[in-house]
Length: 116
Picture: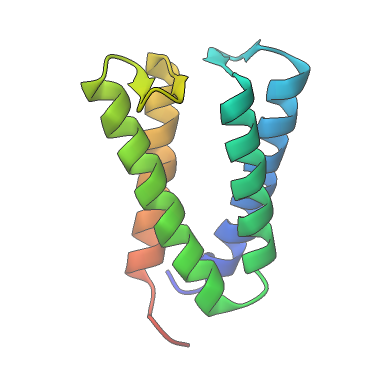
């Protein structure tokens, strides 16, 4: 898992950045619907992940934090009927995406060595 930490931070950062930009360009895409709050969060997390990919420790820490954030958002959306703490609403496809992102980030983050 250790070799995937920086790679996932870099690729995941780019993917979230693109997702945020696409969200501003169109309100829905591939079953996902976006609002301004989501787009800003995706862009900020994307930039942070990409920037953290330069060092192993920062990349690992941010993957774990990103995984926790997306897991909390997914659980909140399930419990609150698609509403994430009143900040934005998500549909079932987005909840699935959030669960997948959380799972991947947490598996790679916690599954890798704490120091290299």
